[in-house]
Image 1 (tube, one colour):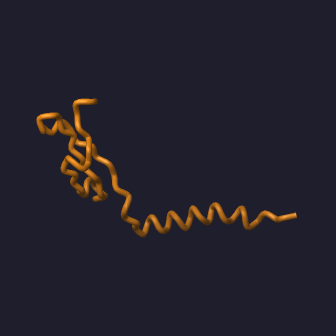
Image 2 (image 1 turned 90 degrees about the horizontal axis):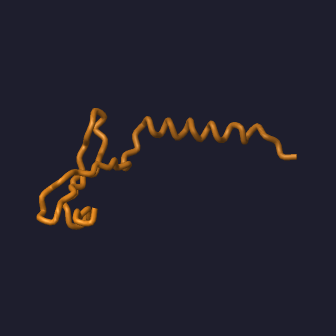
Length: 74
């Protein structure tokens, strides 16, 4: 892995919507010493907060809060 560069500053990083749901991904090309693209690394970006995420957060917080509300301090 020493002869391949995987530095985001020197390679051209693209951000695109990929997949059926159109979620954002960062695409980083891996290049060799001569500058030829060998492969791409695709990482999801978690920068969007949709309505389903709000609902999931509220339900998850409720599952954590309800048992604490029914316990008594003695």
